Image 1 (spheres, rainbow, N blue to C red):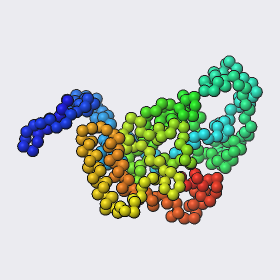
Image 2: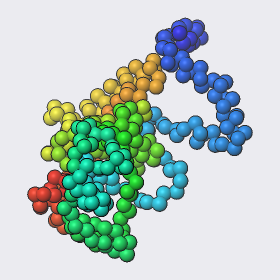
Image 3: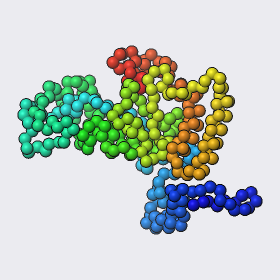
Image 4: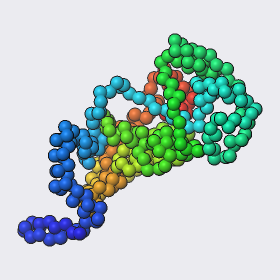
Length: 326
């Protein structure tokens, strides 16, 4: 299918071909969509909210209001892949010691395992437990200091996973599915709320070492959503964000001209490929990277923090330094 457009003289000519996906997209945005909006309004449904969040292609990370009033100002999400078992920390299982050295009876459903260990005898837990706080929640001897503030912590013991191994379970924890292709928690948050700072990535990923978690980048990817909302990984070392600094032969003005020219070419290319989220993300990424060249080095330079703050981060202790730098 070809799209017809008038030229400067008013003559209509076929400018470029539309692929099948773009043709269906444009047809679907005609009278059928008008009818749908009318039906939604008649049912008392906000059409704009029902049709999804409006994203400005020029400012995809602009701040957007939440669906509901926020009850928290900020959230720190730490995902401990390969961390200590729940039955060794905050969730004692008395039956574990009761069945120690024995095979689980038939009355207890056997969980499928990837290594075929359903018939192995149960190992006793060596942990000792103490009930802390007004809530009386049990905490093992490994976390005595955590026990002192246990009343300020919410423990969720109803979580479970469908995955048989780390890859599927880690993916489900971060995306809601054991299979690749779903947006991550950070991508959904960025898509729904945007960012107050347009000069830094809205969603960053900080690993405590150079090794990726099981499943790799899918746990901070965007799945079927536009690639603009994927996480930006920060690396360890002197250059947390690769290729951010200009070469010595290129000044700021020349870099600005280069980015403008590349973006102009990309936008011309995008006109014939509407809906290509990766290309839209590339254009936004070039602009963000240019702004980050001046903002990011300051934001991630821990040397500018006070000695007291660096001490709180644990930068002076070998065991906590890597985590503190994140």
